[in-house]
Length: 144
Ligand SMILES: [Zn+2]
Ligand SMILES: [Zn+2]
View 1: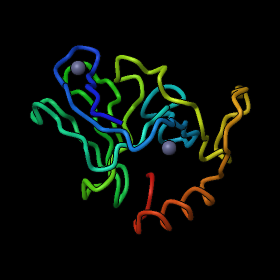
View 2: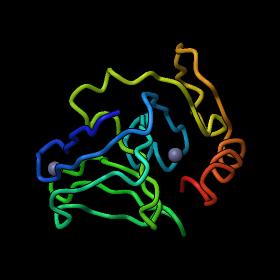
View 3: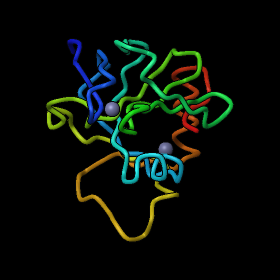
View 4: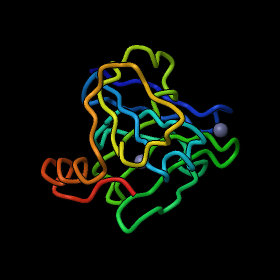
């Protein structure tokens, strides 16, 4: 895919990102739900994310390896990344055309609240299954 422009609600944080594919996924884990205030949909963007003004970007280290980035002014949930910067998962709603991505997978299904379910035909993985697959593909620990 080509590079896309993403931004927060107020526009203080603008960035460029190149998705590694046309699929998006939802993470049902308790951290993502609390962080985003909803079901969080993300798109893998590898190491391609370039933020125009890093000074506007809030960074919260949520584990020993991951951190969650948001707008300091409006609080928008922007992306999760490895602290090394080697991998980013960007909030799909930061892009103008969020509908261009196919809803392909759901992870941390073991932490999904019992009061909702998506009818899309997705690949579902528990947290343990996702971590095993992520570590096999990237050589590092995922999520958190
Ligand atoms: Zn903002
Ligand atoms: Zn999560």
